[in-house]
Image 1 (spheres, rainbow, N blue to C red):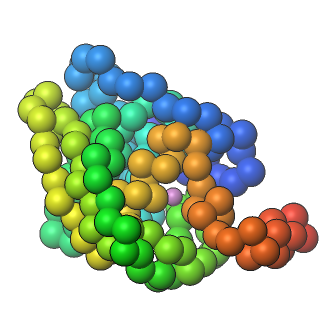
Image 2 (cartoon, rainbow, N blue to C red):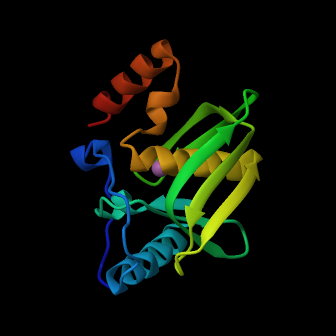
Length: 161
Ligand code: CO
């Protein structure tokens, strides 16, 4: 495996939109392999390709027992009901914030064989999907805070430099 570093805030790459995957090529397989290794090494529960510098719509999630791959994941439905829980991000070391996320979601995606997946997720898994799919759209968890809280966090992040 190539040595891979996590792209960290405020790297402008994190604000870019990732590209849809048209063909699941050998390169995509290699990318996934690297992502899984990085996620496991960093003990993350989710990782998006942009976080290792590839603007591709690929997400890996560790559900506890195993790592799963989601290509072109898309939120199809989300519950009106939200849940507020503390959340972290490998691109923001040591920052944990309470973020409101839908309690239930439905996600469509492809697996590495190109087969369509329809996933229902709730609780922490729903949260991880929302967080990682946000990354694919250049959206970060600090954007999901209320306006006042966001100002506070921005200030703290600037002062920590
Ligand atoms: Co993240």
